[in-house]
Length: 153
Image 1 (spheres, rainbow, N blue to C red):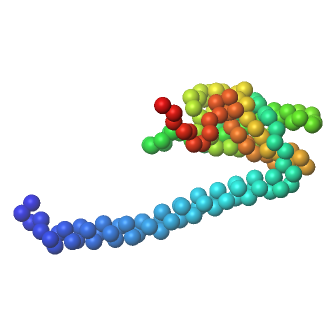
Image 2 (cartoon, one colour):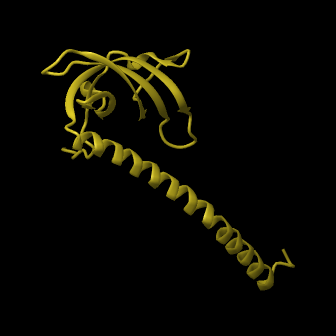
Image 3 (cartoon, rainbow, N blue to C red):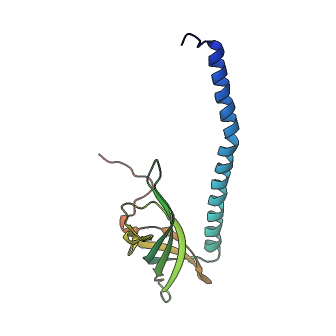
């Protein structure tokens, strides 16, 4: 520690700042990719709503995990291919498939099938002209909680 002086401190700080400056483009790149994907999802959902989208209840009959799982911090998030049975109010019921990212609360996976999600109630927004264009509007109606919880004591 006797050789640790201001010159060493300034050099260490300089190298740290240089490393941060070199990593900044990587952070910006990943941030832009995330925003672009979010914008594409929002554009897809808006196109369905603009085309006369219909909100209908549905039940999950299949849920295959495509990717995701453990993360170092926070709950695990999965990209799941759902098969749902949609029962609209003014027409015959139909089955359709879609991808959705979820953070399940208590789950069981067997052979890449998320069996704990079978039977969950969801609300689906679908295009009445092309029922293959769908997205999940509200996931798990039985355990639905608003995004912001107001605590009462």
